[in-house]
Length: 477
Image 1: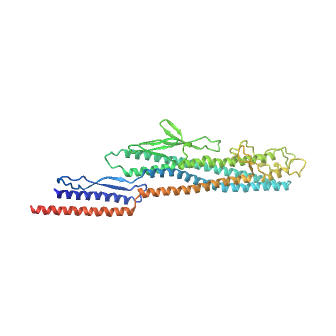
Image 2: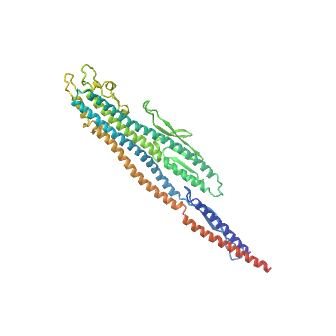
Image 3: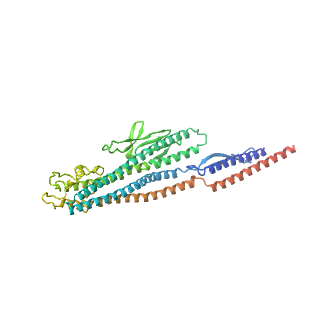
């Protein structure tokens, strides 16, 4: 009967528009939900009704499925840029800390060195005054303290970086576990049911966090399972299973220093070394700062301290003191065979610290006015004796070497800030574009709501008209 068909078409319109409005309402409700992808009800025309002979009649409308508006290509671009952003963020934050230590600690160290040279210069002019030897001793102790404090600050920063690395690893494991559980729940939905869009949104958010933390490669299988690989290391998440990242501290070089934290991926086959295989993300940035910037800064500081101690000791060794009855003729600083750890271990010779009268001024015991030792040590202020590295012929003064360390860190920090800001702009542009595709626009949803509401009202009127027609026919019988 044609009137029945009118009523059914109207009913299908009511139900379809109602479901479309529900989807739109859900979009509006989640406008501020992080990682939410807007959804759209897909309306399909029913097959034609052929019960009227040669002339087919429309069959109404059905909601085929609810579509999640999501672009995997854009997501991959966002994940790629997130790797670099996470690395630069961690690196820039750490470099800011290093720059603060370098500027304060090394500037102070330069002032202490100037005081040391100045006191030796005063001693060369008045070698007979014991108080000046005490001043030299105090400035030497002050200088060694400056080297030690700066090295200790850098070492503490390295330990803090290790703590951040360990905390980030814990966060990675939580995210990997969450991702594996989401995979399990998503693949557990029967194929004949609607995909769990909200779970897929949450999964995308988790993988975005992972990408910023360590940089990952993402792939999907035929069941829409997301698999995560740490490039160059191994599988982090495969389906509903995940492998943990673990940390282990290497032995320190001595009792005063602990070793670095190394990373390992725990798999069914054992532990896979991962420290060198994570160049991106926050972990990659932290590892790079720890293993390159902090290490190279400490090495430069050690080289400066060792060169300075070695040069002062060469001059002081074998010279004569004011106390002609003393047979002391030794190093000014305690001997350090290797530059490694020299800044932290730098220390005034214990004998001189107890008895400043043993500080040497001249080379000849029978010439009290001989002040050549003091003059030579004071003259080191302008001498170029600090070499930049093994086999490098270029040398610098003590202050030039200290300022060079400051400049190198400042240059790295400035460059990192600029690149980080640029990378942030790139990521913002991509995320904004992603939101324009997948995000909720209140204006657009309001227009959709009005369209669906108008269609709903029209379908209701259609049913009302059909009902009146049916009532009229029944009254004729």
